[in-house]
Image 1 (cartoon, helix red, strand yellow):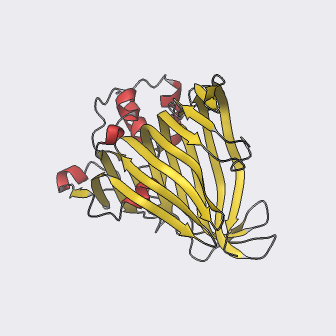
Image 2 (tube, rainbow, N blue to C red):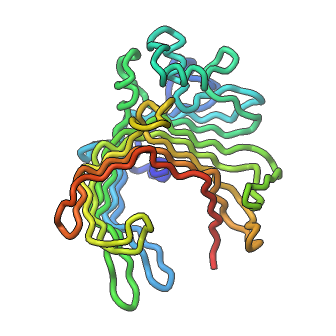
Image 3 (cartoon, helix red, strand yellow):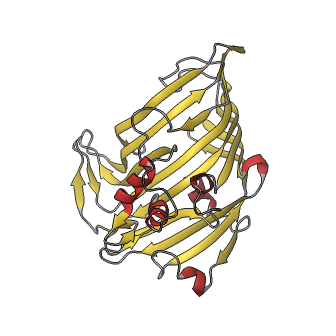
Length: 322
């Protein structure tokens, strides 16, 4: 999502259009390809209601505060049944060409998932807007490691602070996440005025934004300064160092190449419980393994914490004002 936020920052980003010969090698060649490099900084982002919530000192860049680069966006408006780049379809294409070992379980899964009628990708309907984020240069075409580490990033936040008549409180501080962005897709499905009913009874528009992303956090740290924020850990004075988020252990690694995976769909919806219209966030899924080798409480390490097959599933939210 952060990359989508970075797109309007024309003063920070350099866009270079590919020539016709380069464009001809891209799946969905009637669309547009954008090579992107950027560095996003924001001194403060504040939401004000009766009080305020501020995100201070935000920075999105390459690792070690370099330029976030080597990113390629392909944008296509699909024809009926058109197969376009999606997920790990580039891996499937390389395996089919003999550049990768098809006996590797992840590679075999990619071949099975993204092979469609002699093409590689995902099949879409007429009028679907398909945006795929990949890399300009993947390095050695026979190297999975080069592919998975082609786009590196760093996200830093100085502090997240809430303020009101009683003063202010710091929720989180000194946040730093470093890692790699895998294939990421934003699709706006064109279903006109069609609707569908979710399992909880909410009615949502068939025309929806679909997010699908793979990523890995190789090094992260933060200070958790206030309690009662997330039910998972209901205490304060927590510090985490060496955070890693991936998907290399457990039972749900197949087809993810060791990367964490997140999907969600967003559309207009109506709540079955309250009959209120709002933004529906549904079909949310997150799967990862999480390692916290240094877990401090009150400045003292209590050892390491690991989650294997951490999964958020069957999650639906209806967001509206009050």
